[in-house]
Image 1 (cartoon, rainbow, N blue to C red):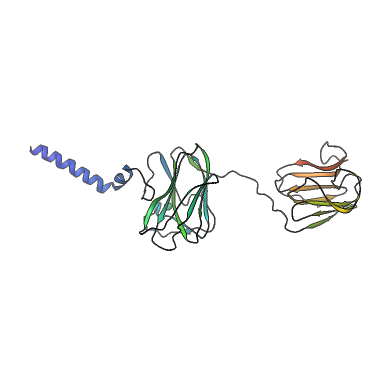
Image 2 (cartoon, rainbow, N blue to C red; image 1 turned 90 degrees about the horizontal axis):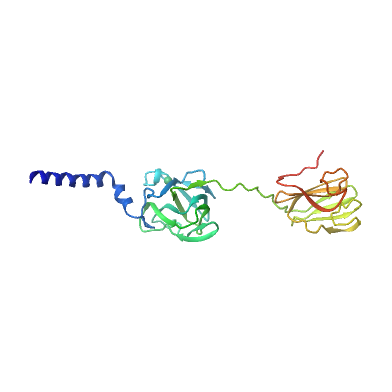
Length: 289
Ligand SMILES: [Ca+2]
């Protein structure tokens, strides 16, 4: 009887001790609910902290005070109508933030996945909650996804951590060439006996001599009034040489036309009467010798 009692007592004290020493056991044992605290990723999930370099902050993020119970004792605040963006692989994502009782708390924060609005949340609440599960999305295709968390009011929202699929990862965005800006002013170029105008819409006009098709108008007829080169749009810069012209477009493609006796435009004939694409992935062109 005594033995039984002491075993029971031991078991009881072990249970009590477990709860005291490992309070997180009690928290993670039950499924996380949106709006509740989630201090560790649940099984099947893994966590990335707010200072991860793969998380891009639009606007200047504000370091949150330490000692508030934030994950890793860090948090970033995003103020104004700014956003946070990142890419991840996997099927699910949780946004871990902080709710607080302050009028400055952003109350209208939208979450976009791959460009589609998936829902919204507020960080305004009656009391402060650190490591709160603000938003959850599951059931995505097992692929790379782009996330944008956008505040739509002037308040401040806190990002503490991101949970994603245990088998996934935060990843870098695709490297895409930065488009060249379209000129906002018009620029006149003087050729051998012809003139060119690059307008603010990224289109090119030409007039003057046209013996080599250097006006790019599809013929060799001279023009006395400026004429728009058809089908050539998105031009950010041009270089005019002796009876031939090259043009750079915002997508990095380079076109050329005119006198091609030297073959600079490739094997496309000696007289090229309309723009032909001969180079790609170019960021700038320069005609200075
Ligand atoms: Ca954190």
